[in-house]
Length: 517
Image (cartoon, rainbow, N blue to C red; front, top):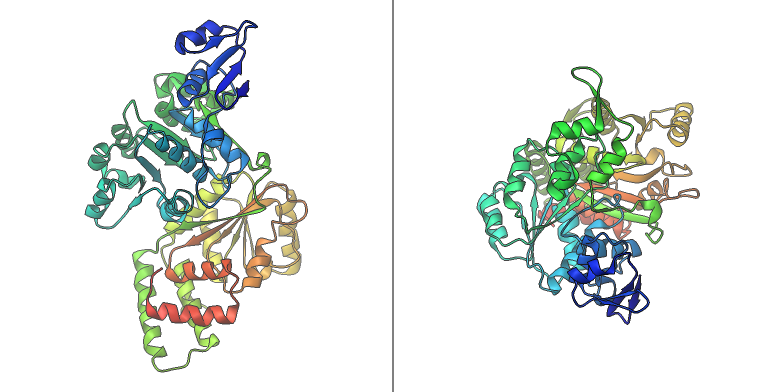
């Protein structure tokens, strides 16, 4: 297929008359070639006729807005989405799906084909990923986040007329009426595995807010990762003609019945799932040769009510103690460590005992990140008592993990590092940053998760470098989990490489001021 003067497509097909019947202005040339106007509508028709490798006009006629230059795979992904009213984007985590979607949606808006976009995603990435990326990539578009403890404010956000509205999955039911009346032409579902179960209320609400004309793009880097059956609910939304009409019939096509209560996947299940989840585009990190060596992303994990209560009590006590006194780095460090311990889930009450808080928000986010990663995962945890709790939680969730901290002797550490690098298990290594920030090579992983931040820029940089070393074949992703103001401030300072002494005193002063950034 050849692009002629950015105006037409020259192609050869077995049955050109079939094309001219659908695109009357297409011309059959004397040599049998076919000349078709290169417009988005014409390109969409060619795709619907089953013609492969049709380019979208976005690649030549769109001014890629925002602060970033798109990578090649992002241009291709955005082009694919503009050609499909309903489709899957199955690109691996860390490949920049969000920006590709934003560019594709902005292009359709510029043509007047859509006016409003509803983004459904986990709470942890509503602001940290979507709102942030929209600000950087499509700052000329209006954005509203429909998440607030006051349901009235959620409804106001949806009814505001903003071009992009971001909502969490379970919050959709609260604003269902406003969404159905809001004129949303495109619905983007990030982490669409949340809609794999057709028997949930979440699924039923979603089906009620879409219409046959709604554009729907569903995103996930791990399609049907738990079972081939996960594909059924997703395929039923995007392209129900590709699957049997009932769930039991689909199950029979992908699973064997071993006992009354146990089914196992058929050898052909992967192929059946692939065919069900079409049309789709997928890029792995290995294929994205133009990605930067390290990608940084944030996930918001709100504090529990109990954590917030103690966090605020401690912060107010700090204000009283500091009144009229000179703030030293030592005093600042002690106070900041206590706030971090509360934020991360455990706080020491004496040398041997600690109080444990509810960490379910943060832990569930970690499980999602582990599930998204096709390779191993490093989890850096600043405090040893938090590591103990996390180790128990991962074991209870049947995630194979090993632990390294200051109390693990050198021989055992060497054995753990060797198994992590050379064997299938453990998949996750939970590690205290100070215990493994220099010299080690751990490039069996390309995902690094910070359960919480540390205040040493040097240790932070060196810890991330454990995966980004000679022999690493993939772009690496560093994920910051954050829930409290102090964590967000520390991550910001780490990003800006502010020195530790300056960091501690400045953080302390800002926290006393209670300014929630």
